[in-house]
Length: 129
Image (cartoon, rainbow, N blue to C red; front, side, top):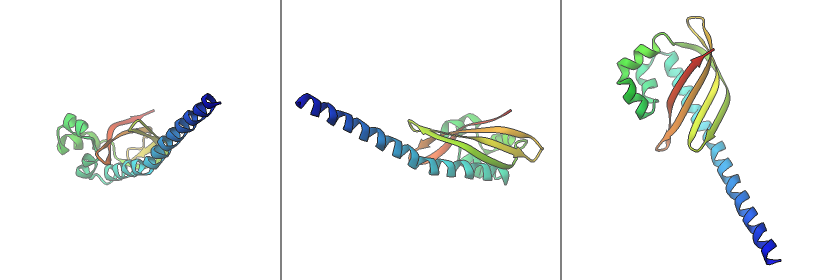
């Protein structure tokens, strides 16, 4: 009987831990999506300094500065976009959807994000078919 009660306590404790982890991930979806929206809006308005500021430090280092970022963004100006899937797992985020660009292209869009301190930052950008 004691063994059964101990097993139930363990199951309850594990269930609570999983529930709290899931709630934490769900709570992160909104701030992560807000970062994705702000990033796309900055790209749309060609505010390279603002969109560059939303990139994670390793990606900023790889790009080398706002001027290098401007070369990447110049031919990739979004007109509008839709995010259809959002997920957070182990501190990493992913936002998926599609975007229409001012050059007439319609492409799939994936943003990967990570938390730097308490702020979500973009670590990867994929525009594809």
